[in-house]
Image (cartoon, rainbow, N blue to C red; front, side):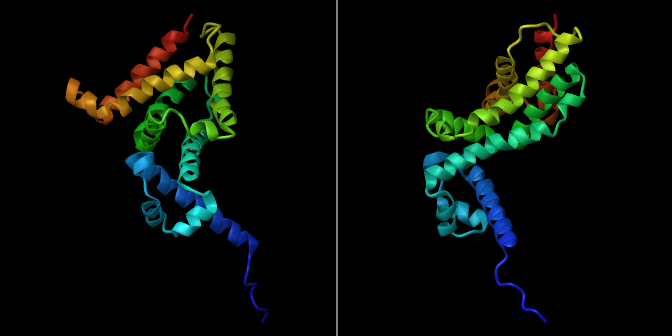
Length: 214
């Protein structure tokens, strides 16, 4: 019987990828809960079930890990947007689906909202260090541009709408009910339950579409 090899490059690569993904998932939770200053590498290590030296070996230092986690937050929303298959929908339903997804993503992943708030409080210091940020951002803008063009060609949307500005408007409508849920509940007695948030998504979709109609 032949001895099994003690080292397998494929297994090592899989283990490395799995460990990095676990660290990034734990880092997203830690940085969103405690901010950049309050986050602790030891808590991230415990959550990810890895050693602190492994984290430093992969990412170098806390700042680099924070930047990697911030990048991961954007990558995840872009990947999930791609899975919507918006190109297969008619333009109006594609806009509705994108709006509903955006609010649902913010609701289901509160770390996304929190880490963006943290980065803005830091003056956008780390986001400028993400080398492929423009490429990550361009995915949704390009997809939205195609939807808007199809809408113009079929006569349901007016021409001249900038896709980047339109996406910012969508994100704003969906971000506010989640990022301000605690103050909205206290100041305005908003329930902030599933039904209320679903209605906000419908309202946001209708506002977005009315902006596009001729």
